[in-house]
Amino acid sequence: MATLVVYRADNLDNPAKLLTHFDDVQAELARVSLRLHHHPVEELSGAVGTLEHLPQALLLGLRALYPEHDWPHVELYARDAIPVYATASVETAEQEHCHPEAGLRYFLQGGGILCLRLADEVLALGCEPGDVIELPAGSRHWFSPRPGEDLLLVRLSASSAGLLVEPTGDPIARKIQLPDL
Image (cartoon, rainbow, N blue to C red; front, top):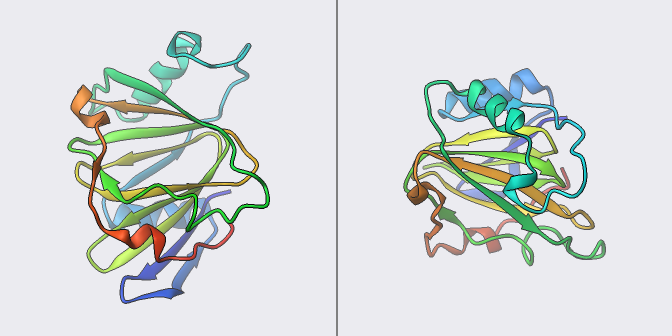
C-alpha cells in the first residue's frame, strides 16, 4: 500500500498532508516531477545475491515502464536488517544525498521510507517490495529502512555516474522523526 506524508520544510514536526491511496500518491509525486509505479516482484528462484540471479525479464519489465530512458547500468543494493527494537529514522537513516543523473529504484525485498527534499517540502514515501520510483537527477533524498527486514533493491541509471552517491552535507535526515509507514 502506497503511503505518502508531506511535511513543510519549516515544520518537520507536523505533517501537512497524508495520502494513502495509490492514485493520490502518484498524483502528488507527479506534481513535483516524480514517478511511482508498482511492478510486482515475481517469485525469484533461489537467493538473489548478485545481478546474475536477476531474471532478464524483470529488468526488461522495469525498462518498459520508462521507455524514454535506456537504463543500461544496473546495481544491486543489499542492506542487512537493523534490529526490530531499533528506531527506524534518526539513527538508521542514510545521510541526505543526490545522484548526478536520473535513475530508478526497484524494491525487491524489505521496505522503509524514501524521503525526498524539495525547496519547501519533504516527502516521506513508504516503500514496499514491487515499488519502482524514478529519481530525477540531483534530487536530494535519503532512505530509512524498516527494522527487522533485509533490504534488497535494484538501482538503474543511464550511466555509471548515475549510481554515484554525492552527500549534500545537510543533517536533515537526522532532524526529522519519520512515521511508521
